[in-house]
Image (cartoon, rainbow, N blue to C red; front, side):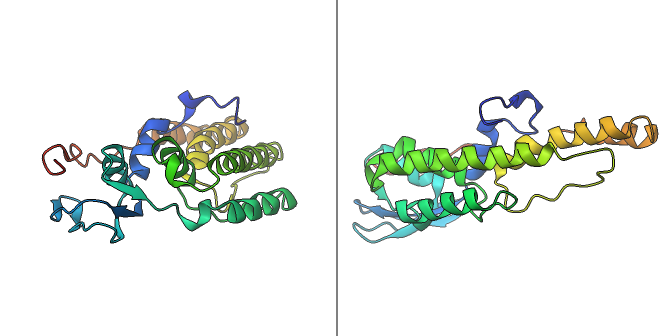
Length: 213
């Protein structure tokens, strides 16, 4: 499934899910002195050299790109933690291990833009990819057990990207089972599915060119 996912069936695109994930908070260590930023989403700073502070992921990446900070890797992204998660995922074919809801997007952004801040970065990248593959395989295996008697499916500890892929597929599978028994239910489900959720527009990202000069 990880390699065969049809993203046209997803409620949000991968870019939209990543956009939502950019509001997750993360710790940075500035190497500049800068006044606080007063934004619509909150106030962040003031920024002092070598004094850790917490900011949204999008702001951390923007500062990192300009060489204004380093990003502290979250505890769950250590090789030790990821190894434990991978082992537990493999040992529990019916359970998903708890990870941050946006672990896929957070790890991708950090690996792309802050790889020099991540200890053992190549091992971290490999472990995260293995975890994703194992989890998607378990999702596939779970979907194969669906039958006409299935009225609901409970999947605990799925991530945002996994939910985004599974949810529309599940809706279509269940509709296919029920289409002969309850056409009114299918018509109602089709109407609901056609209403695409809207990503909240937080406005343009603040330009840092004038405040980080």
